[in-house]
Image (cartoon, rainbow, N blue to C red; front, top):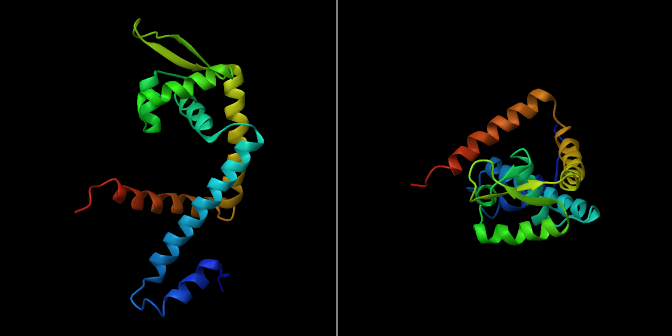
Length: 165
């Protein structure tokens, strides 16, 4: 028998109130929300422990994902924010010596942002903390189950990327 969690009890409370409730949909959505909240809390605590605000980590993460160097406009695109907002983030990270502005190799008029050794170290330290919890949680599944979960979530996410009718 599958162990019960708090979402099972949640669904049981709502079924008499909403007889048309699909327990599988409610269970999946409620569990995804609980996991998201949990991971967000772990991220906040982990980043506080390494003295790195979430917005700074997100900016370092975007840069790391571009091999440590990008134009501010590319960072803005990756973070889905206005380019002017990225400037303030880059300024703060530069003051901490986590990034530096360097001339672009593609366009002499452009300045790129690059991670420094300290920036790489700060990003990696935070990533190790966050990744450890992700691996702990998904360690409940064997490799085939993790792949299946990832595939199923991809199918659901693809629906969100399509315009609603």
